[in-house]
Image (cartoon, rainbow over all chains, first blue to last red; front, side, top):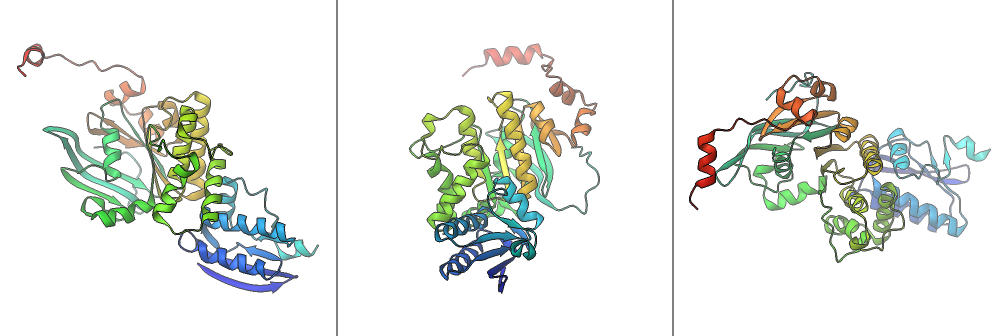
Length: 107
Length: 272
């Protein structure tokens, strides 16, 4: 798994790339929680996720919950088909704010 | 051992059982069994009581020592693995046993979390969220603090399923998932198994004698009888198979065994 970060439209965008599994999800979690600690609004770009397991999804859930408590914005961007299937399995596709592109947030 | 499935030389097989023979004492239980399971498929192993299907499953899990033959899981022959290597291999394998095999002294959540504490160093919050997600998946949200003794049979099976998928294993094994369940719960469980295959890309091996369930969920079926494979193929292949023993199983027809009077008398009157 690779992690890339960029700032756009008032958000810190964290791109998770490749396989987010039991081995790599702690890195993703750390990145998400640290970015939230910096009081930034966060978007997780999942367009290049080829596989994500429950531990990866759990990191997204924890991040979203923390953002709500802190009054920060948090959402999922460009969800790959593989990631969406897992979100649907866990019935989380209706829980997260989901955007198909950055323009949706600005609008 | 006819495998009537279409030619699959180019398909990735994540499980390969080759020429497996096993004995209990002097009795041969599995006779030269060969099965290939493709990545991402639901393979149902069917057969009557005593056909050897649960024994085959236990071999795949590395719980029995084979007399001869090989069992390749994800490319490794598990009959040749050391205990440590087998421990590593089991990270890729989830199992739901027929009776649930839950620890009676642990809560539902503790039972489900056990593999994560055993095999990973994930933080407690991640483990807690994962556990609750799996309980949602098996329709048992809010039951995490109950003890197994407070659950119905169907709920125990679903907790066992939640535990078997907590690590999102690449290989998932079920022993009689529908046995003893009412038709609605059984159909729900079947649906869940298919969702796991589709969403997580799991390869799933299910041992069952429930025909309706097998036909609903199988990509392919292997029929075992008296320790031998009668056929491996699609649901249609199996339904259309003209082997009498296969048809007897499908039509729930009891075996008509010719009795050897002399052997029967010997069995009844032998010393000891």
